[in-house]
Length: 137
Image 1 (tube, helix red, strand yellow):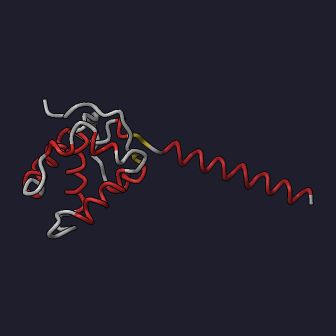
Image 2 (image 1 turned 30 degrees about the vertical axis):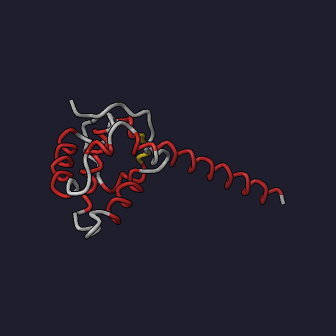
Image 3 (image 1 turned 45 degrees about the vertical axis):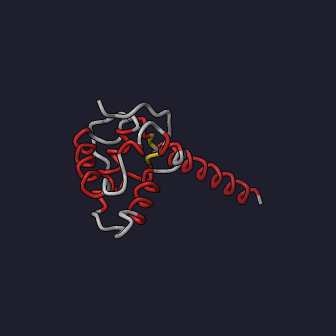
């Protein structure tokens, strides 16, 4: 009985440690999770693939991003990939959708960083404000 209690306590401690470690790995969009070059590629792709129906201003100044607070960038990328372009969802390469999201982050005044966003890291990047004005300067 005593050994069982010790094993259970150890299992609980391990679960807490793993949970804390997983939370520590989460990054905020506020940490500069995309590069300036990636946002520029995303802007070009947006112009080619999205401007037929959308204007960049629709996604600026925090209004659009507020609806994604608390979710991961992977959620946002996969939503856009599965619904856009409306006449042919998923037509672009996944990395192109990621680049477009980098442009959207810039449109919302979120800071750039040194590294580019890559698919493997998207689930660990949380969307959260505050959002600044348009990234256009």
